[in-house]
Length: 114
Image 1 (cartoon, helix red, strand yellow):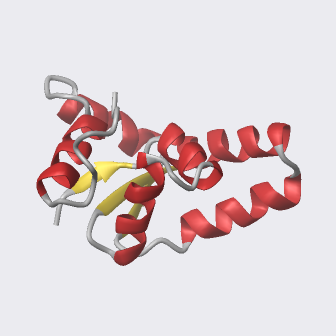
Image 2 (tube, one colour):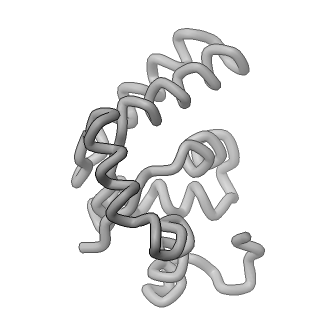
């Protein structure tokens, strides 16, 4: 099972735009086909964005959604710095995830993904 860091933008866009590539990624994550790495920093960032742009109740529902995703791993800030050091010389994780989804015929190739 591929593993990827769950990016803030994928989360926000996937929740707000039903016809986006990010929503397709969220669907595959929810099915348990992709293992994701969540960090406390990511959850704080997403919560802050939704509190500012929606309201605190909506932000709370998004947090519960993120915490309920199958095949997810939660890491703290210290572990995140180790994770980044391990991946810093490789390509962007989100790009790798999108390439996987294209080859798995989950993400349409003709969409503008970058």
